[in-house]
Image (cartoon, rainbow, N blue to C red; front, side, top):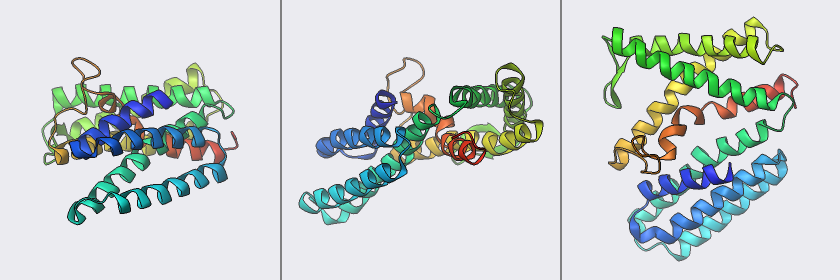
Length: 236
């Protein structure tokens, strides 16, 4: 998770911050990796303390290196957006893996997301008529989104009967109804960010597929609710 978070954060900060902020890009990547490490331990006080120290550090850093007052608040806000948007969910994913049945939770997320993405794509290609959100992603359709929701339910049910028998059918339905739309929203959020930054892909790490952030987008909004649901369910 440290490696993944570092790569994703560097891609994000390279899109978000101008070249003159190359030092902040590197320090922001390191700060995000540190936050992932603190969150992965599952100690809420330690993670909150680390986040508080990062807040103090970055506020003082930009105070001393503000350059242009008209842009400093935007650069500061984008840096913190990267930490919350990427380091927080990836750190919680690492913490999720250490819970009881943690490996099963992680594979459930992957299976649900892949099933949702695949179903949304094929239903959208074959039956898509009404645009879902053309300003953000012109190729996505309402029919594809509904297909993605059905795919999410299939993914959860496969997980239950394959390797996660402690889940009941009501939970499967609940998880699909919550996580399915969140997976699709995660994809739209990253598309929104890339359009805002004026780029097509977040990076070139994966030839033909863009950057690692392009592969994580559907997962990022799913990790936090699954982690806290697992705790509430008594898997801690």
